[in-house]
Length: 373
View: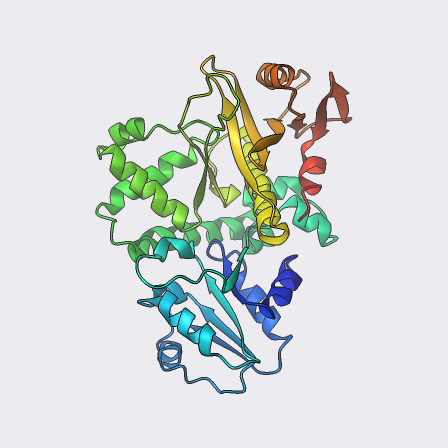
C-alpha cells in the first residue's frame, strides 16, 4: 500500500538529507524502496548486514549513485560525524535517505551537530485520515483491534494479525532494548511493558509502578523512556498554561500499536485517537513547520479532558473520547464554559453528529478521517 508521505520525502531529498524514523515494521523500508524506484542508480544499505556495513564504513558505493539509503545507521559508532562528513563532501547528484526504528536524537551521545543538514519525517501506523486520503475504506473496527501497522491491518484474519504481534513484541523486548546500555533488569522492563498495556488513559505514577515491580522510580522512568525511544509507547503530559490549579504532572501513556492495548472498547478507542492525533501533530510540524503539541487537561478538582491540541502555546481544541454517550462530558463542558476553548466530544457509536451548547458531538470515524496532513 502506498503511504501518503512518499511524495513529501521525495520533494525534500532534493534539498537536504532526509531522516525517516518510526516504529519497527511500520513501513519505513517499504517506503524507502518505493522511493528508490524513482531514481536510476539507487543503493540500499543496512548497517545490520555485515557486507553492507563494510560498504558503509568504506563509502565504497559507486560515484554514480544518485540515491543512497542507509538503514539502522544509528547503530554505527559516531554516526552523526559520519553523516556530517558524508553530506558535506558528497557529489552533487547524491541524495541521502537515512531510516531507523528509534528516535535518532536519543543516540546523540557524542559527535558534531547535523543541524541544518536534514529534514525529519516520522512514519506512523496507518490512520483513518491516511486511509481516507489514499481513497481506502476506513475500517475503524480493524484499526481498533489490529492497529494500523500495515501487516496486521492487511492480514487475512485475526489469527495472522495476532501471530505478527507476538513476534513483533517478543523481538523488540528480546533484541531492540539491548541497544541501550541502561537496561539492567530485562524482566522488570517486560513487567512494566505489560502493566502499561492495562493503563491506557490513566495518569501514570512512577512511584506506584516502582512499588509494583520492586525497582526505583528513576529506573521505572528510565525504562519507560527506552520504550518511548523505540517507538513502542508515547507520553502525553498535562497542559497547564492559563489553567488554574492544573498542577498534575503525571503523564498518560499510549501505544503506537493499537493491538497491544489490554482493555475495553473505550481504552482501544482512546488509544486510536491518541495515535491519530499525534500523527496529525507530527504532520503539522514536519510538513507545515507549525508549532503543535498534544496534551491532556486535568485540575486539582479531578476534572479531566482526554486531549488538547496546542498551537503556538495556546489551546486550539479540547477533545473528549466516548465509546457510547448521550450526554456531554461534565469535565469537557466545564473547561469549555470556563475558558471558551473550542470543544469536541467524539463518539464511536453515534447516529447523527450534532452541537450541544456549541460543543461538537461527532462520530469518531468522521473526526479521525478529517485529520489530514
